Image (cartoon, rainbow, N blue to C red; front, side, top):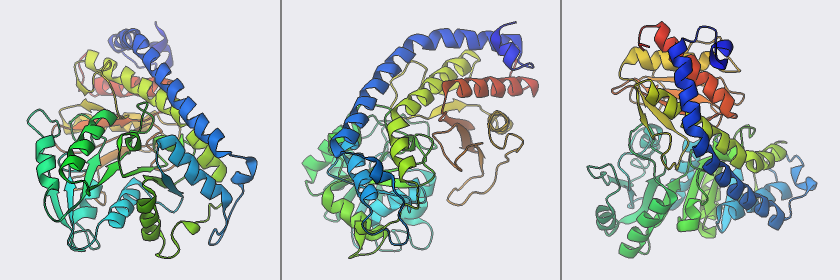
Length: 424
């Protein structure tokens, strides 16, 4: 009996052997992740040191949050770490979608045109653009998507043509795959898109959704010219301990506009009490390169393991990665549901809960989500989710430790076998 069968008593022997083979495959790949983590840790450490972070910056602020030197210093640290002119890091951001929406509303005005460079954006953002009351469409902002090429890559010529329109104001670039099977964009590819767009229209403003991508590569979108970059603190840059919040980094003038949108014109970045969580935000950012590396290693193992069991996976275990998301194509609705329920069962929190598909706000299809996390909705912690629609893909991401990811993957495979969905 190998270790997997000891740790998961009902794990069939063929699944345990597949896990051993997957582990042997990914160990050489993990060494590349170690080098990436080292580079990113050095960059974040330098940002802390250059900004002069001190214990006084962890102090609590309340009410309006005036004269919160810790909050101001955190803005600076994020800007330095991401290679940007300025930063806006606030617990008042409720989610990644809220943060991105703030950035878009900061840039766009009635009569402007928003262009999505990589096809349809993530489901919840589509509601911001042209869905519910209060959307950009209701505000008089035109919207256009540049379809992906047949090979699922960004059509740079079409992007350049789109941004030449007289009303073109903002080019939106989503780094992660979202609920789609296209490959996530690398930072280098984001740079190519930005250069093509700026060559066609130097005044176009580029806004990048960086969710799931922070510290997965050695550079971030501001390093390749992004005007605004937005993300969530309960994803990669929060290191698993930030309790809430989001960040926007980029050009000074645009960051100030975003602050005015989040709070109020004339107040801007001067407010926003930290409510006693500043230390967690600093510490989460410092831990983020390592925690992201653990999640990457877990995703690589999951890819090798489920591919060995006969499932289509994207990306493959040894592919270059630019986000944390591991897609496992399960093919049947009952398989997707069983997979997510197994991940929930393998969680440290709410392991007894049985997730079911439901009509989540902002989504067009029922969605099942498994996330037994210490921070609600934290997707740097291990989670699995997906819309219940063909081809029934589980989007598996995060993991504070690679060991937890591996155990959850074994649990999911064992439950699929027990349900007769997976033949071993």
